[in-house]
Length: 253
Image (cartoon, rainbow, N blue to C red; front, side, top):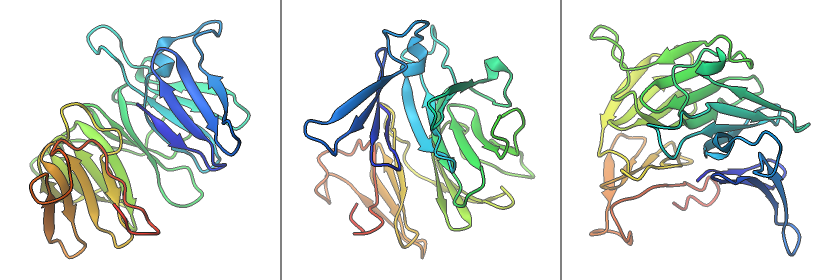
């Protein structure tokens, strides 16, 4: 499920139960390398259940892990693969300050400092500035009546837009202040696909928000006006949309 475009132009692709493949397509045929490979000593299938991914400011690749069967296989949390190819694993089971091991979103804040926002299934959002993940800067969840929070603790995506952070949940969208980590607003929408969504949220160059749902593609412009693209009013072939990407150069969706 997981795909990651690295800074050097290579691609990382998750192959559940088999490994994670690195692809260099600058040659013909492409050159591939295998990591967390099933032929390695001590192989753990859980290391291959890649869902979310991101590149840290220091170039390390972070992989958020899922599971093919939540009732029988506990996800392994986060894997970090450094530039020197050393590996680290972080999870609640290992004592890190994480609320859940099933990681659906990883996003690094703009700038050179380590500021990682991690979206979890049914466990909200963790904010880390400590690369060891032994301590966390904040945890965002449903909140309280006096300090309201996310529409749902079931998180699917986290995207930065200037000083704001948009968080996509099963209940819709929440916008937070990056600096204070306080909720600015909630926007109720259709839920994401029941089949899951690996990259369901994208921010365009104007700051517009694009959100893939089970009821089409939700678009909220910077002026707060909304349009929804469906199979009935657009070229979409289905209203069950899993992923959306806004090209920052061309503006294409």
